[in-house]
Length: 160
Image (cartoon, rainbow, N blue to C red; front, top):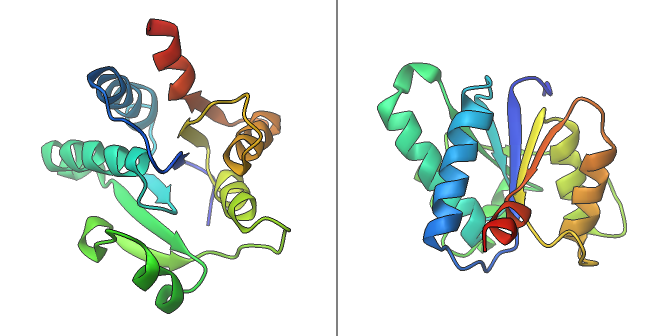
C-alpha cells in the first residue's frame, strides 16, 4: 500500500449529522481531498461520520466516474470483522482488505495509526481535547510529515 493519493477517514461513531457538518464535509472532500488528487479512501468502521463521508464520495463518484475513486474497508480479518459490523453492506465499498495492523495495547489506536501511515490525507471528526484513542490517533497524525490533516469538528465548532 502506498501513501500517495490516499485518505483515511475516521471519527466518533455517534455523530449528529447537521446541515453544517454535511456541507463542510462535502466541501472538504470535494475541494481539499478529491481535487487535490486523492482517489483511495480507507474506512474502518460504519459510524455516522464515516457513513456521511462514504455517501458524499458516492455522489462524487457517480457524477465523475472517470476519477476512479475507490472506497476501501479495512479489517483485521474479513470473516471476523465484516460480519460483526452494524449496518455493514459490502456493496457500499469497492474492496474489503485485511490490513497489516500491529499489536499495540489499543486495537482502535493501532488500526487508526496504521491507516494514517499509508495515507497522504487524514479527514476526521473528533474533539481534539479528549483522551480517546481517536484523539491519540489525531495527535499521531499531526506528528507525521507530509500529511494533510482536516478535523471537521474544529471547523464546525468555529462556525457555531
